[in-house]
Length: 152
Length: 34
Image 1 (cartoon, rainbow over the protein chains, first blue to last red):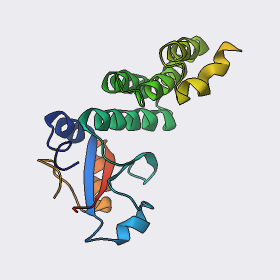
Image 2: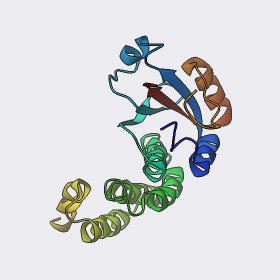
Image 3: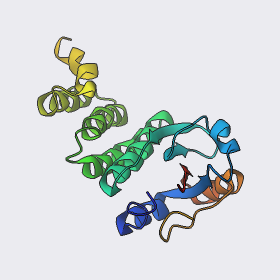
């Protein structure tokens, strides 16, 4: 992460705009393994100011995947905070930053549709988004979670 | 610190205070330099 991802200017800009970053060396501070309940590195954990966790990623991420992870964390934080207007806005960003990532773009579509539905209080938004997910990523795990929408 | 020009903090408590003031989330990175 320190050799490729963090020196990336897009990554630096995104962290600066949206996060307060904290870093722990697990060799110098082995107690953090228990504190954050993670025995593998790199571990990336996104929390709010109350310590609520919204996203956790284990293993190396290149810059595009890192940005997708962070965008998904922000989207999920908005949804769980029930600020659906903000979440809907963040969904647009998450879709942009996960585009072409077969692991994360389907998730962005899934939760982006949730945000759109909740923001508009319109279930058609959920159906539209999830149908798009089913069309574009039919074999994805997120499509499997959404496929009941076509049976309802 | 392993991380380009990013200004990494070393205290979650201080990060929470800053995040509250700035309306941001906290990113925790656990790394092994080896």
